[in-house]
Image (cartoon, rainbow over all chains, first blue to last red; front, side, top):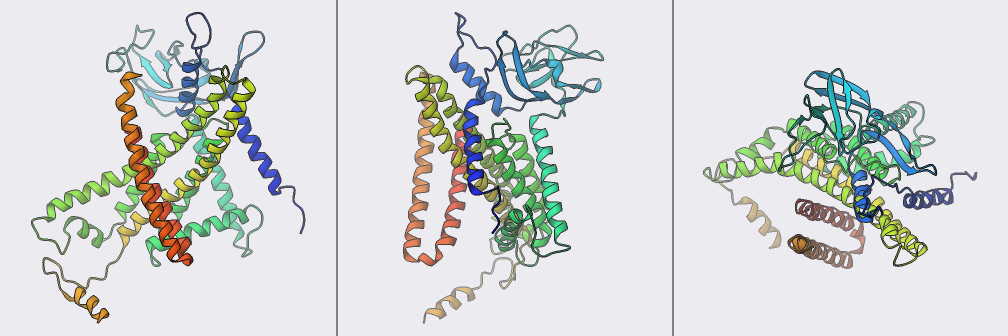
Length: 395
Length: 66
């Protein structure tokens, strides 16, 4: 067989380098100084972690202070699109000059905006800074509708286009041949896995085809974005509660809109239960179907991924905090080993969370479209035939 | 640090709950695999699914309590 340069050793080395590089992608972060001018490590590290977890309005890889004392930022700005009190305003986030403390005021058409901790506020006339009251509500500013292309939106767009390219080229191959060539060979078993192990068993043979598109999209979307969050590029898309909430709402809409009569009857006016208890159970079922199921999908994905990111970055930050106790070489080695192990677990978690989300979505959809063959009659009379039949088997 | 004691105690309780739950799942799965090694694949799949559900609860509680 021909030796390809893309052997396993190549990828293992690439992976190892990626994870090692994550240790060096530390940035100096915003200045948090002790009183005597030294850098306060704890708050710097906390800022570093917060900066990764939160969304940002520009794509920012690293920044460092070069020899002549200037800050050098590697990255590119992204467009900021706001719908404030006077309509739409767009500008590039480079106008904020990497400021997230609310000091730089951007003025466009009479509207003035500041960026405070990655949230953009529109200042009312006469204010130069956002002031907060005791409940952390802004006193002299309002939040415009922020539709900007942030780092996470940029990540979603890039991954969306990537997935479109991969899967459309795979689908096109089936017109001419039955076994795909190239990268399609990696994708085909995964696609078949989603169809045969997740969609078909949960939704049933008759109706699974309508929903496999959504299930495959969700599966690969979550998996690729989880893996993207592990790279040193600084993305954290599925660890944003808005993204996971949107995915959970999609699942909610799909399994609510495709519920058939049996589903709604079993939820609201269930047969086989005394009539007086039915409203109580209906309320419980409604809360379960509309609130608890999507909420658990949301929280599971969000908490797993963002907790994983925080753990990885805290272990990387051990390199800095233990620099004094064990030598810098020792702390780097310890942090590298720990971060490597946790990153490998995070790769498993990336796949697992995508699988669980997809499987639970398929389960909920299956429950909504399931067809029951009603042997027992409705309302009240619970026939004894079922138990007697079972007992007859044992005689 | 003193004001964080309730937080930490709560976190510890969550970990105890998750630990007991996962331990029972794992124990049940081990026993089932020991009884019928041919069904290992299905048992493992079911075990992972239940473990992920439990982790979801545990993480959700952790995040609610910060």
